[in-house]
Image 1 (cartoon, helix red, strand yellow):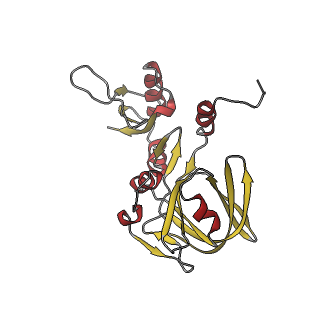
Image 2 (image 1 turned 90 degrees about the horizontal axis):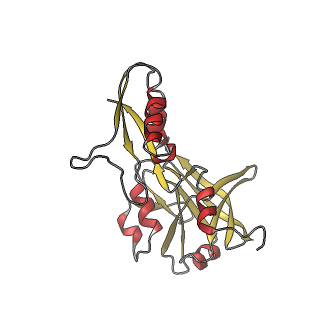
Image 3 (image 1 turned 60 degrees about the horizontal axis):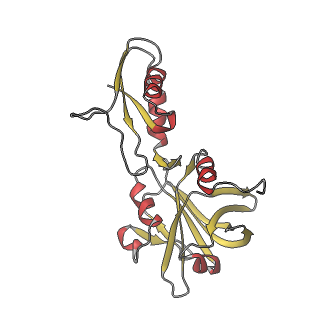
Length: 230
């Protein structure tokens, strides 16, 4: 077996250890109909000239339209837009009917209430295995000041909530956890009356106390989302 042949599922899970923003990439097809897909393989590239990059699978339904479009846009979703991400990650005949959107200066669809958006002219399309890298030159953009939606280890997270949890006081009290959605399921505990775990933390760091207790239950820190003082 070649040294660089890996189990695709294991490799995907390892790549997922890197937290990313969640975006919806949009453009128009040759008939000027809006097309779009959810993507987290996005990064800024250069300030001068202003360039960014997004990766697109060659098997994507909108691959022909996206790679042929002269302009495309990146909508960086805000923390409240998980539903938008899910809608544009699934096949649907008219996903744009379910969101509030308008056209940017060059006609690309831009969503309302996003953290930021960028409209780009196509700078380059680079072959990269089973994907292509679409490099865009930014022609217009706007930042709303809203926090972006995060994604890691197969689940969504809200950075502002995580930051608030990490700033919890180190005094005692009761700490609890809302356990992350993972593959569409939540993880409450109990036999008859299900509930989320909570523990007494008379002193020390509440976050460390709860993390330790969750690990005793066989949950890694990637399985829990935020710590709340109750």
